[in-house]
Length: 109
Image 1: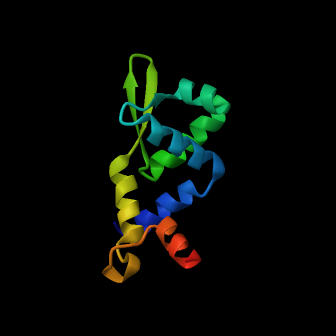
Image 2: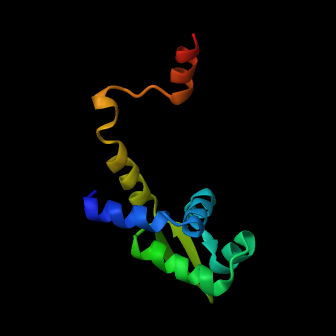
């Protein structure tokens, strides 16, 4: 992933409402959710939801598809995984990372 794409994605996720929307779409899986269902579940006005979905779409974090008269949004797992890979590609100097729980337990010993 290029740094400019990573910055665009991180900028989009650096807003509480957009992060909440994105996390909900990740939980929904590949089938996604309709805009109306998202608005109801997250208690977000339609106009506000539309604005934030547009920002997430511009950052390539969500995709939209129309089914009949409804628009369904899904997390773009390719972009999400690319961002995670970009953020962790040099993690732990190439050595397998120790989970935080294990590290914390070792520190207590």
